[in-house]
Amino acid sequence: MTTLSLEQITDLARRALVGAGAAEDQAQATARALAAAEADGLATHGLSRVPLYADHLRCGRADGHARPVLARERGGACLVDAGGGLAFLACEMAIGEAARRARSHGIAIAAVTRSHHNGAAVYHLEPLAAQGLVGMAFTNSPGAINAWGGRRPVFGTNPIAAAFPRRNAPPVLIDLSLTEVTRGKIMLAAKEGRPIPEGWAVDREGRPTTDAKAALTGSLFAIGGAKGAMLAMMVELLCVSLTGAAFAFENDSYFEPGNHPSIGHAYLAIDPEALAGRDMALDRTEDLVAAMLADPGVRLPGDRRHRERERAAREGVAVPDDLVRQLEAIAAGR
Image (cartoon, rainbow, N blue to C red):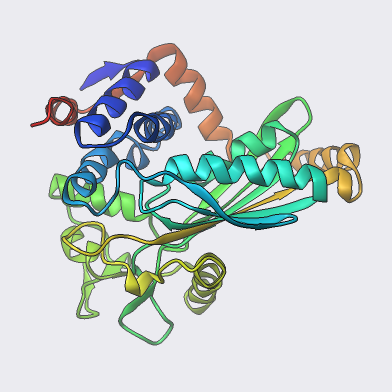
């Protein structure tokens, strides 16, 4: 393992993405997000994603020089077109629009169409919480979850996230996919040649599997059975029907040759001042936090992330040597 500072991680990711064909601003926005995931202890959403993004840039599944544009807008709503590029630059634009419109209208939705994998969903919401706004995020993805009673993956993992500001404390951060396990964990298991536990996934024929590679092209189990599948459908409709993006079953797997992804994201921003007021919102949030922490075994959502960030800032992050070598090779154009 090689210990890298967060600055070194950001630079390594940026150079690799530029080496694979990304424009500097796309590479920088993506590298910032991946470094933040590493700082949070989310290796599944950090540097390990760079080889996949690089493959997509090189084969044309992602346009490294796409320019996100504001495609439609009305009042507290707008649509950003990512143009088939990597997601992060378009998501930054959408979050900026959501914040501005929420301050004017009390609530806003900024959606993104024709996008790519957007990493850890809650990452995009922290700028909203820093401004005292409540943020919510939704995204679809290539097929991963079967409709209840079916075998074919028609919904994505479809993560949902939320960020709630607190008084004199880091925000509450909630981030979860709607599968029993994130696809990133299965991706790492496949790369390392490890089996996965029973109950995580089925193969493309609908048979339960412990083979991580078979799971990546099969279907993952939704959380909560039928209820989880319905939540996944809700996110699919929110992120696709309202944005014109592609449904999960229309997006080929990221992990084998396929079409150009057209993923949809949706970000909500809410100004508490437009409702009961900012002070009331902060006070009531602290009341709930205090009630939760009255039980000694309770951990607030986001606490582990905040602790990992402090440690990473002090000590850096351990990165597998083979991954560092692979990214240096990509950066050098090999």
